[in-house]
Amino acid sequence: MRSAQRFEGPSDLHMHSNHSDGTQSPAEVVRQAHLHGIRTLALTDHDRTTGWDEAASAAGEYGMTFFPGMELSAKHQWRSVHVLGYLFDPVDPALTAETDRIRGDRIGRAERIVRNIGRDYDLNWEDVVAQTMQDATVGRPHIADALVARGIVRDRAEAFDGILHPREGYYEPHYAPDPLTAVRLITRAGGVAIIAHPVTAGRDRMMPVSFIEQLIAEGLGGFEIDHRENTEDGKRLLRSIAAEHDLIVTGSSDYHGAGKPNVPGENSTSDEMVARIIDRATGSRPRYP
Ligand code: AMP
Ligand code: FE
Ligand code: FE
Ligand code: ZN
Image 1 (cartoon, rainbow, N blue to C red):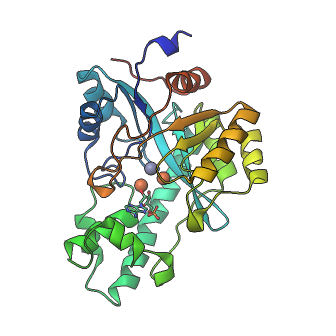
Image 2: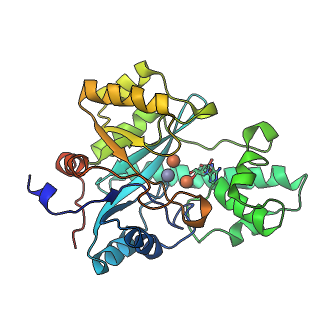
């Protein structure tokens, strides 16, 4: 396998920068990955690919391999479903139309959440804008940062456990495609679609297995199994489904800078699985050092 010989592990294929809800620039994310011994990393900002070039050139300086990626927002019934896409064509018209739509809708949604919160707390939209890099994919994490800056909560975790939790009544949904559409868009753009953290506890618990089998029929590449938010029972179930269908399995940190406790490289993806992603994709190539 030609491709498999040109990158080195350990590989962390799920990291966020301030182009979405990470707190650091793409170059700083790469530097942090380097400091933690990562040799191949993917930048997977939510619904956005604008961080790729900066991350790729930083990776080059450290002799690391950069893996183009994105975490596409999707929704199955009430569940938020995140679909990681790797090595797709970043200018694919259907995919970029969809990410434009999601990001556009996220802005109005965030404004609605802030308006709801503003009825009970001293928070306004300017507070959120101040926490959000221009054109970043805006989400609840930026509202959390604004709540922290206002001294209303201590950190993002407290905001998500409290004010930002749907049970508190301030929450608003945003537009997101069905997971079947998300998998199809990534696959048709030449990418490999991997369901991110598919078995977290609680409200967003796993999609039904029958629906996952529909995703597999639609071209799903595999599952992100080694992720701190997946349950142990869930990981076992996913491993058996992956083995049955010969799917790719990955592991990653889901690093968000200071926004989450997740550390680069706390989980990683095997060389064999990285090679399978490279061999399967046709939309773009990793940037080797
Ligand atoms: P949104 O897509 O705007 O609904 O926000 C969801 C995002 O919030 C996810 O991408 C997570 O990275 C982030 N998030 C969820 N829970 C937490 C938490 N407890 N602490 C920090 N970030 C979180
Ligand atoms: Fe996030
Ligand atoms: Fe996610
Ligand atoms: Zn993520």
